[in-house]
Length: 296
Image 1 (cartoon, rainbow, N blue to C red):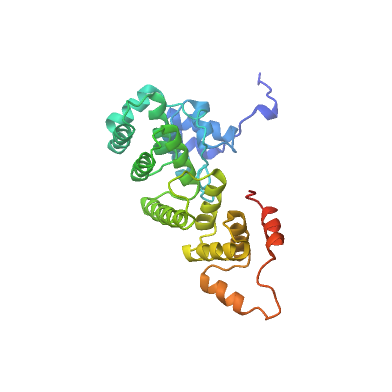
Image 2 (image 1 turned 90 degrees about the vertical axis):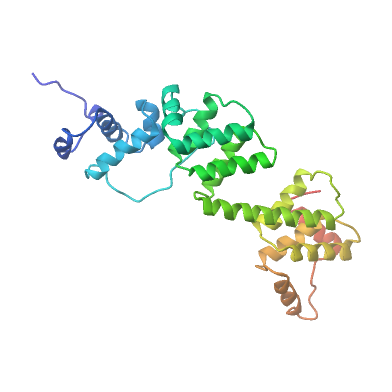
């Protein structure tokens, strides 16, 4: 007699699957069932639940997609996480096999060990393999990030891992993009160095507020050094002293007005009518600047 099963416990599969059973492996069948039961799950979720590697899950998924069982769909950027503890299901055998047989991953591990000057442990290998196997970050980019972090005395693999994830989330997924990122970072650091000299800061460490401001001016707002220097001169002319908060108010106003160069600022000032004030009065301007963040 037939067994009656509640509808919500049934996993429906299309009949087209029957034509592929002969050539499907056990892993491919496992992934077929998993994704039909959990259509909104990620590759990482499937790897965790089935005990397969991420690479094996993606390979099995590709098999069914090629068979027309899984729809091609719109390609989406793979979601990654800073805390991969839930996804690190790489066992020692998998890691050892990858190190022995995959020359690219072996190179990544060798460079990591050399730059960090330590013997990597299983968690270290798992973090690197997650970047390589799941994120699909090119080995050259992983190695470049390791070298860049170590050059800046950041020798924690956990820090390096988080940097890699942050860069990936920012769209840096090729070595060409990574080189552009390094060039931009170098330019920002150069401008910050020039600004420190202009402001007479010497070799002291920046405060957290100063670092946030400088990164914003040269990084987020992408101002050339000349604009920031001009804001400094206007600040001293108006207040008689250095006030980074006052400078920030000037630069924020320029940013909000869409001014991106010193020529824009000069043209904007020249276009004002003779009766208009070109800036807030001292105390009023500082108060407005303070109200918008980066408080002294």
